[in-house]
Image: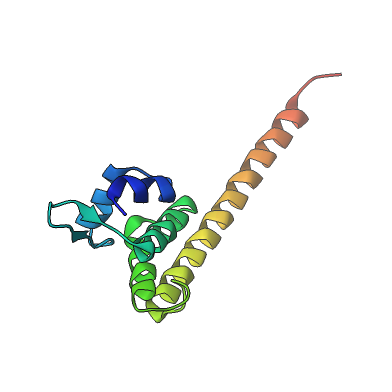
Length: 121
């Protein structure tokens, strides 16, 4: 399939696909007339990349998942390097959630202080 077909099936743009190629995440074959040519494996790789980006992973974080799929694994998360990324991402999320809980508590306390100081009623 050509780049426009892959972009449509993967719900992205040809420009994005060329960027993935530049970053080494997507490799392309060229036809005799110079057109990029892709197959179903490439579609699967792009869908994996898009899925991970959609949930907050960086483009570089997707690399181990892509390499895992290229190695023939059923999912991109089956390899040790992918697992390391998942563990790190989970730790980052836990830190973020903890920080949000702290901020929420400070806002709640401020509202409580304002309500206590209010000469309302």
